[in-house]
Image (cartoon, rainbow, N blue to C red; front, side):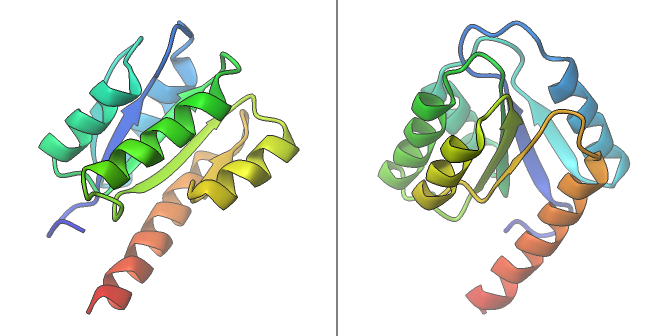
Length: 138
């Protein structure tokens, strides 16, 4: 984890053009004192991982409403491993069925949040999870 503020990249992969939820989460994280990089719409997993590494983020949050979650999340995890950046926490949200959510968690996604969930859950998750990650690295 970087020193100082928690740095989070919020990505909207694929062709989904609905980014209101991603922007709400990004603003809530900023309001909670985190630094947020928002990639904008229509980014590839490759672009998201490249930006995350360049920006030295602690976490990547993906918003997937298009149904491509079983492709996008595993690809981001795979690319992070290829780049030696497995320490970047991957989380996300969107329209994701429970059975797919469970598979994604097994693959290495740390948490999936549902639409309409309180942004405070995401903030609490990031603060707690990244604090735990730091303490286990030392």
